[in-house]
Image (cartoon, rainbow, N blue to C red):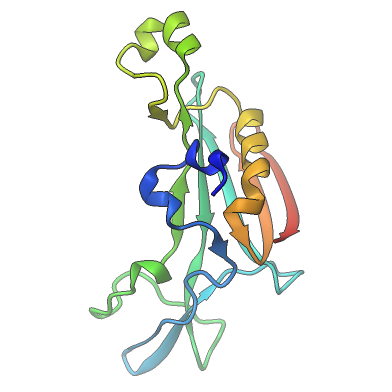
Length: 173
């Protein structure tokens, strides 16, 4: 696996890669005599492309945070426009058939520790942090890792809430 993934995700998340475009689909269950199946969220214009969101947030300070999200919906088999969520009458959906959310990280550098000892003093060099310095860094790293991160056809939606910017594009690996 490429080192770019190892440098930006925790060990327990690495086993989830690559994320296939059929992730989370196919678990069948019944609630109140209605039959449901887990199904992914797909692009409404390019229906064969699965949706993935890179969400970039900040709390108005000097750091930005990023999460990768892949939605999974519980669709009624006989009425595909009907979805169900919340308490499912005791039905437990397996983890691999639920929404995927993975937080991106980066490693703390020696330069950071030396230049900002009050901020990074408790960290060792190469410790993970979820704090990035800017949106551009996150987007650049994300785009470089895409070939190792995904398999199949994807509609990528990058949402940066600090400046309300959005970028959407299709990829296939």
